[in-house]
Length: 224
Image (cartoon, rainbow, N blue to C red; front, side, top):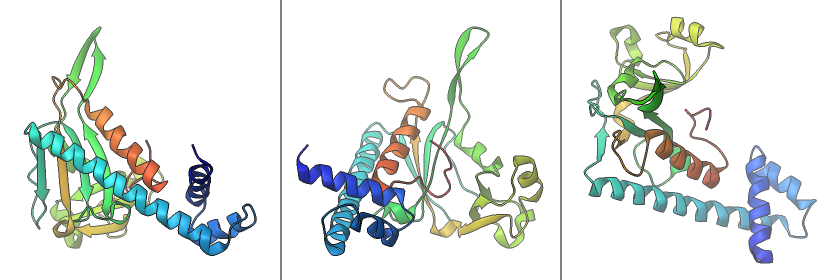
């Protein structure tokens, strides 16, 4: 790795470790022999490059699954989501993917291999089971949601799952609420017979690429 590449990587790592651009610039000005404007240019160049690389890698996955007829796109409306009755990975976007840092909300999976009575079996939970979840997000499709019906909500405010379950219908139960009409959901369909991917593997691939690109996880994801 060249000196320039090493410096760019170091500067970007420090940016990811700080809360915002200004904090990173304050720190780096005292550490390296570059002007504040030069450091900012380095960070912005790396952000732009990483974003383009993430989009390129993600779209490559979409095309790969489309070519095998294992991809479904849901343009959400103010109605119950019509999920494929399959297992795999689902990616929740706030409409367009041109700015993943702003628009990628959540990456999740359903379907796991588990040992059961000394046999490995595939627990083929399907996408439509997602509407039962209430942490770390919730697809709101109950009359009890009232003004929040047909909203995607995340950022549970209660400290425990039990407490969140009791308050999941409350107007202030989550930090963020987004209308279904603003959502697009990508479903990567993965069965137990797939010879390349498991749902867990693909979920981790997408989240890892996002983490490396942004230094963060999508806002509704809490772990990798």
